[in-house]
Length: 430
Ligand code: HAM
Image (cartoon, rainbow, N blue to C red; front, top):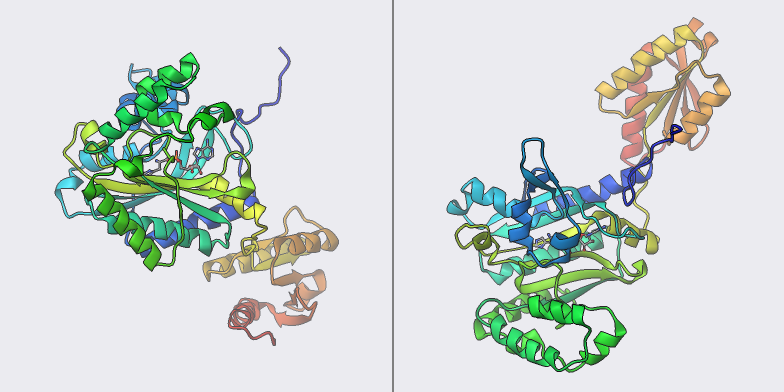
């Protein structure tokens, strides 16, 4: 077979500059807000025992039945690339015995996740999430805190068209009665055999069926909020009170069921209407029973994950531009080998002084090197030509004005530092 050039696997993509800078900036903005709320950083492995997700996420979910990248290791272990982060965080917390220490534990993470989904705009097989989880507390203040933090993240990124969908899914105390009512209702409908089978395993998921023919029949379906026990209603009311106090608006979404089985009580999703079918840019909720389904003690918890890729698509849809970080502040343009050696030293010294600096390489001529300087976004260019070198000087050019001044070589670094700090403090005079 002829040698074919290799490509990134289907449903994956490379992040390349300058777009990759925007991705980093979004992750950093997300991390900054969660740190403000006292969340500490956690990192877990990119693969786990398959059983973690089967038990944690739920054996009948699409994620587990259709979307996992599972494999047997050379040593015979059954492993899976993580499709989500919550089960891993809970596993790590239980394993380290942190649930026995001071609570709540507030943790956040940022990383890659893997789902074998049908790729389309905004839906990838390898994607990026930032997540936050508060473990070891029933307090609705944590549900509200997390939701508000996500709202603040989207705001800080300049997004204005994010809608918050909110529901309460109840728990073991009230969901069985709801489930029975829903099963009775679904039994009387005209559904195909596959949907009926789904209804038997997880009737709530039928509410999420996107087909018009199904949705039409669900108009009068019983809804979970009408079945909430009084403690669960009170919990939900407090979450909503705190959101209202914080000026956060939401839409009641009594049919919102999430795609993962561990949710109890508060469940929410952030959607953006500029994204077409894959409109969920983040989601989460409470998962008070997850620790027990992993064989641990009771550790009530709540959290969310925000999709970094979809958040960027939402920003593009709203024409929000991240303050385009120029790649460097200073660019050196040496003409000739001797100047190149001098420029190399100056650039190193600037970098060591904390200035982002770069230089033209490959012995490029003045014209090509100045083009590279332009492209770099540098505020200042240091040109060292043959004659400059004879006179032990360099030309320092301010790119925005085109002004150029000759500076003795042994003062270039100091002068550049002064000019940059003047520019940073708002002055623009040399
Ligand atoms: P999730 O709703 O499955 O929740 O995913 C969260 C977000 O990740 C989605 O809203 C979406 O933005 C993004 N996402 C999911 N799948 C893809 C994909 N194939 N391509 C691109 N983006 C995607 C969870 O993962 C839960 N662990 C959230 C959570 C944390 N619940 C409690 N704590």
